[in-house]
Length: 388
Image (cartoon, rainbow, N blue to C red; front, side):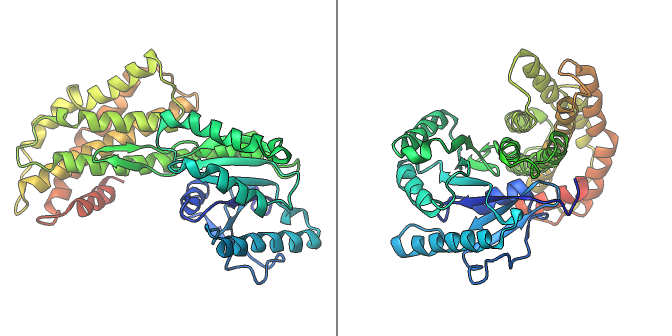
């Protein structure tokens, strides 16, 4: 995709605290997201509007910062959006017009949906024919998603002039969210939102299907890495015990959640075949050849001046990290059609390579440099440095 391509504009609107910044980072990437050059008729409104883009995708995101509950605060944001709209329309340039609107509503505050939608409709009333996508942020509860979608449909249905503009409702989790220690909601809905938004852009703005797929490949890798980091931290917590780390089975629940979460990112559907594959991945890292080799070899690693709990935490976290990296690579190959769910022997080979000689060498070297009484954050940073 060319860097200087004409891009569409997506207006991102929602109350403060709804998670717009996290959503924008998930869609564009924390490093790739950047404030676009302003001056397209938005002079005087930069405190209320920020524009972000990534060279790899066909649209930029216009963030309405400062959109908060309360008449005067809300009015300030609404006026900023309207001023930007009028100034952009006067400019007469295609790449300054709003093409899609994301209404962001907080999935943990579903009672506020009708009021939030009223405010956003008021703010965006000047764009009469622009399609609307409602993004349910922080959509951690799967059982509640259908109920939340229905509430939003009902809210639009009673506002008849807007009902036809509701194109879709996408629940998202922009980054892993810890529900309780060791249990988290994985990222969801991000690549689906990107694909839908590209389809809604006018001809001449939308990217080719393959370009979107290539971009989403990068996003899926990044989202997988966020899961691996969270799971590794959980493994560090589980492994931080004073007993000798001789049984990788204690990590099975942590590894299972990690692998299931990564599988979801790579669109691996739940069925008997995928369950068998996931079981194979866990088995290799626990009771399989790699797991047994690890359990035996870890006893022989000499460690000086480091507490047993720190050593165990580092080893446990490293195993979870390596298994997550291997699972992400495996699922990517399946997603791209290069491998199949039934190719379990290849899966075993990949994981055994991840968890044998070079892994043990890295562990041994890192443990020599591990700070005495290192905390969980320091251990995680060391693991990412050594194995990442």
